[in-house]
Length: 204
Image (cartoon, rainbow, N blue to C red; front, side, top):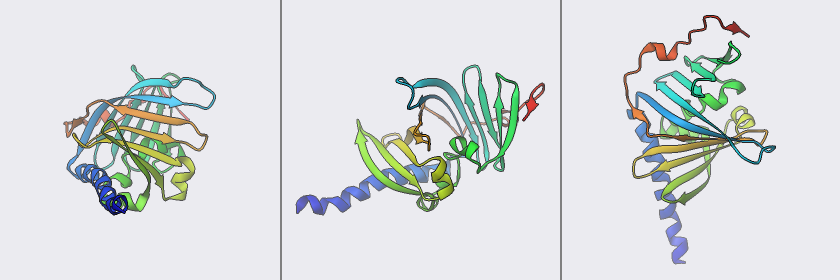
């Protein structure tokens, strides 16, 4: 009986960690962070690791770079994503809400702007704590998003109120985990960061 009485208290505490992180997002106008991305495929025994860099300027500008030096870069202006293959020297433009853009746009999308927006976009399916890091398993409520990204996982450090890692599972059962280095909060980012130079590139 005592354990049952504790359940609502524990649930509120768990939600408090997530809500505290979400409320912090309203104070962030720009962000820059290096990261390591691990991609796991059913056909591979070991994950493929790639270094990268994320730059964000709210409300709608995003630059997501994979590879050092850059192999692929995704730029967003809030309406469209420009996906650039630096190796093949090609680029194409897709809608920000398209399946091709989902893996780049979900973290900077509407669902993480406020607690209310989060609750409208996601359902918390599971929560656990590992070495002090709170891990939340999220299920998108939108069928279109869920068809591309059935599950998301957030790893939040309650001591620093930082997102330590984000993981996505896609419809083909592959998983991509992005582990962030300590981000720079509200840095001054020049407009050139978000404007691709496509000189010499072929538009697909």
